[in-house]
Image 1 (tube, one colour):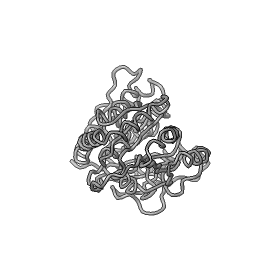
Image 2 (tube, rainbow, N blue to C red):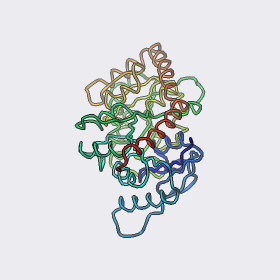
Image 3 (cartoon, one colour):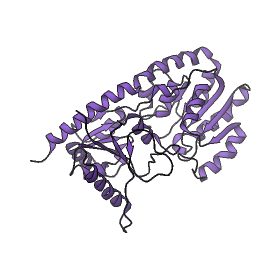
Image 4 (tube, rainbow, N blue to C red):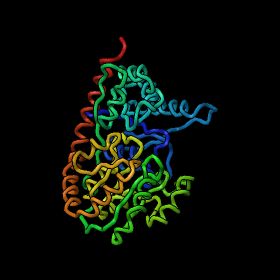
Length: 360
């Protein structure tokens, strides 16, 4: 049975080509043609998945989150969905569950989110909406202190047809993503500066900016990192479109994901594996679960750990090839076909759940 689904993006997520973050890209990949996607107004062309309709945000002097919630409710009343999917906003999911069945998809640590910070709040959510986490790590964080609650796992996915054809690997080590301290990019720069003189045939590149989009601002962190990167011999390209990132991953011999922040999934690692690069990730959050035995683990702030992992891969071409092959095979488990089949089942489950949990 086909469902009318309204997908609500987080307030800061732009559903636009060249400006989209990880959540918007994931929504676009999975959206059915009849799905309605809503969020903040955008400039330029919307992403191709579903049908995007911007929210009409009131100019009333109210708190932003309240105005966003009111606009979402108006969008729901206009569209009359069978199901509302809310991404990363527990408080909004609970509010909208009073008017329609809701499925809450958590992409980050729920314990840091408004409306889910305490076990009591999370228990109430689990009683009212179908909660889905993008990894077992997210599900475990949601369940902490709650006793027995059900959290479905909906892993992130990627369109494997978007993966560039295999190319001649360059002796390049690539960091791709947001250039912020949480992502450990400064640890990569330090590690490269310590070992680069031993590998004159190798280069290092950072692709990304503080946020997604060509208008990403300069920040104090970036201003401090640039001279350090220049001194270490690391090229910083700034923000690049997603297709350019995939092209770079298809050519780089090694991709590093040295996050300090416990990644709730780790799309960069998945994309790098799919593109055939050898991967180094931090042993935090969901990253070890995503890569399995297909990558090296190195804590960014453990003295010498990242340097040792980089040297090991640069020294051993056979190990790079082995990890690259295993990574491609593992990434194939996260393809669109499997993800779309699971999405349809979870949507039906969310509607059944709402009917079962509705107050008499």
